Image (cartoon, rainbow, N blue to C red; front, side, top):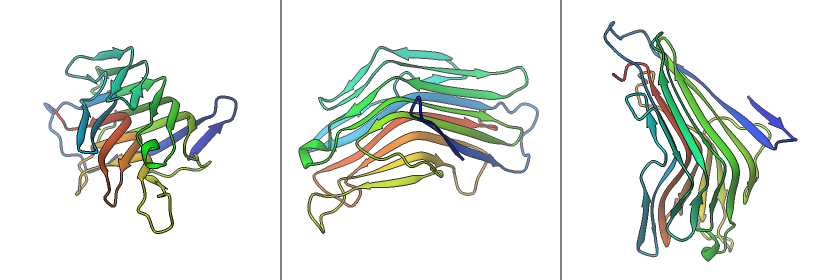
Length: 216
C-alpha cells in the first residue's frame, strides 16, 4: 500500500515480505547492504559508470556517506548516507537516504529532466525471508501515482508516434531470485535507457537495499 503525505510530497512504497521454508543452520548469518545508487550507461558510445554510491554492508563498512557524486556531465546525486547493522537477534537491516537526484540524460533526445528531491530504501531480514520499503519525495519529470505496486513501470515516450520509448522508469522495484531463497533487492527508482534500443543504453539505480536471511 502507498501512503501519500501531501505536505511532504512523499510516497511510501511498501514492497512486502518474501519468505521461504526455514533452511539455515545455527551458523548461518543474515546479510544486508545499501547504497544511494549506481550507474552503468553508454550514451553516444561514451560510457559513464558509478559503483554503488555510499555503500554500507553488515560485514563493513557499516556506515557510509557522500557530499555528492556526479556521473558524467548529466547525472548528479546529492548528499546522502547509508547504515547497515546485524543485531544480537541475528536480524540484519540496511537503509540508504539521499537528499537529491537529478539527470538530464534524456533532454538531448527530447525527453524530460528527471528529479527526485528525497529518497530512501530499506530492508530487513526475517526468520526465513526479507522485507523492505522505499520512499520517494518531490519528483518531477514523471508522474507519481497515488497507489504504486512493486515494479510499477512508466514509459517515457519518444518524440513522434511510432518512435521507441526513450526510457523506462521502474518505481518500487523488487527483485528476487527464482526459485525464491528469502533474499531480495529493492530499488526506489530504476531508470532504463532506451529499453527497446536506441542511441543510449544502460541503467541508473536510485536508492538500493539488499537483504538475505541466509547470506553468511
